Length: 628
Image (tube, rainbow, N blue to C red; front, side):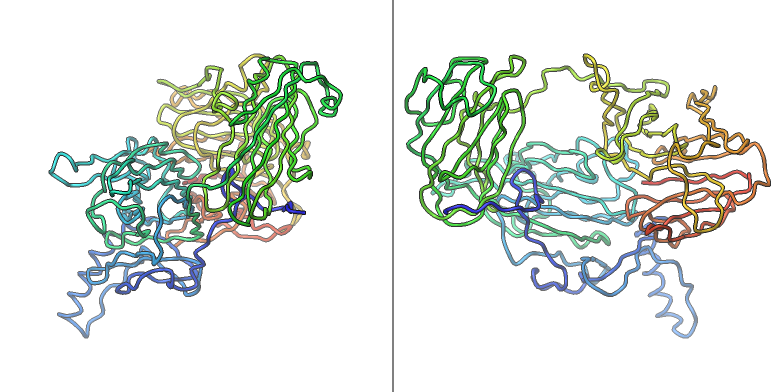
């Protein structure tokens, strides 16, 4: 048998191949530098301290030590602290040590994933090929981001009109608060040159995604940006990280080098059929309507919109043995065979989806057969096949019209606050694809600070900044009752956060499992125009207010009780991996902060394999910030 089906974890987009991982157990992947870069095991950032203030203080301290060596100099809290170990790449530059970090390997087209942590006021940059800078900066709270803000493609400072590049700002500010881990995904295409060295295509950021938000899509960069390693453009260059503007940390750096694919198809023939086929096996006894040779897979060879069948056969030419990823898009039903082995199949007549698989293929020729039927008048004919490897772009073997890019034929229905907040009831799947919550309400503000509140549990379950929601899934035709937040949602935790517990290890009740908890809906505050959520628990009235803070960077939650002196009541603030920060806040999963504004003292407890941050409540005010 020439092929072997594999079950692989799809780690990177449609291609489904694992990336190269920089293990960060040492700095062997990088060229030598002066010492500001190091590998560590843990980094803690004090989000209240600006790195520039800290650096100024350190300079003053050095000066004072020189003048008064025998006198103690005041010690201040540090903006960045770290512990020894491996797995995290950290830059701690100063006035004397401020080298860039440059990989020993070079790249052309590349897909790059990483997580980055930026202290307050800090600044760095990722230089693709050492020449095209994607800005890394603490831009938390910036309303209108510029090219110099987080995710901007930086300008240069050339004066020659042919070399000036003004930069490209990000589409959105998706930057998180300082000291939190932020996810960055980059797909970069290098400039292309002919045999004479003449540039035929500009460098291009195919896509850049920050914290789940697309901030660049298919933008060209016609010149190098500011401070490149060389003022020229090349087909390959190193990955470079700026090291002279401030502390910055990285982890989980993965990359995938991409080249054109040499996979090809030849001797493609086709046969078309007419009929209301219900299963692929019906093609065996069907009469052939037309047949012939073709250069590409093209479902339009049937000449029909519906009730058709088509079969392609030919040879797939594999240049070298290795792993190959096949993606097959279709409407109706489909079957793909290689060397008489079933590779992909969905025996139906009315489906519309993409099937993927990964194979080990030997070098040489492989016979294939591709069958497709469709009896679904409400779907357009579509059939497309791509084949690629871990290090190549997928080769496309269909015509554009046979499988055109997906186009939304429905005008989106956006809901956006104007001068006042907006509230919208909907179904919501926690985490985007998790437990479906049936009694949730989305709240959007004109300032762009939005959240999802679960009326069933009295819990704040998700927050995001930017535009409010896409209500198309809810209101188009019959709808499904849900909306899509138009930003990267920071999810918190599920179930009821307020409960009377029998002991310190008892579980908080699941939503709907505490009959003493009754939701009373909400009223609109006349001043803020925001909802005030109301519940009754064990005869005590509870009010929840969730409002943007004064600078519109995060929210403040305030919980009031109608009675004091309640016994054995607890309030769950967060759940997950919890670390206390030097400023008194708590980092939750490295994704957001909780900072208590009242006098209760939080306690971390381990319950049912989960760490929870809880406070004892007696009916007094609970007030805290949720910062992301």
